[in-house]
Length: 170
Image (tube, rainbow, N blue to C red; front, side):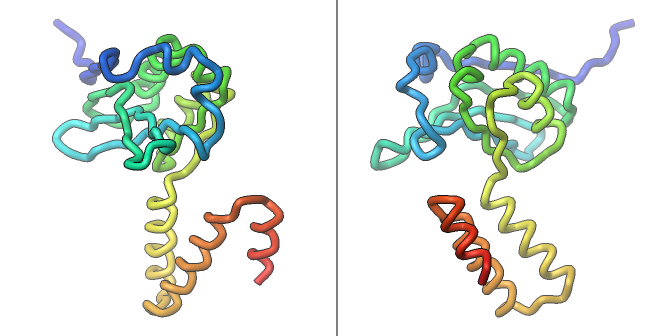
């Protein structure tokens, strides 16, 4: 009898994104220059993608790096995927590339385990959505919700910790 395993497909897009992109130190600089974004599409199968945003170009193209097609969101599956990413792009960890996620704990743990030097950041859209949801749960009206969302966006747009601390005092 064959043991039932969750489907796992990893695809590395060598023609679109080459290893050499991450083998040169100057390619990866800061969060403002480049970042890898990871997110899931909720369809028949879950598709997790790692992409690279080229924000130095005017149209800010996002280029796929690798895909993981799987049936369930399991930390073990994400861990195998990030083992693959880490072995395919060893300099990602050395250059501390930030990953932007929806804060799914299994995903975050898998990134931190396999790429410990990389920061895991929360997607601003998810953060704002969570804020709106929690404000609605507390009974906030639309005017107050809009005000809090505006304040959160102001904080997120700060260029420095000093600016953040100044704005957050109000």
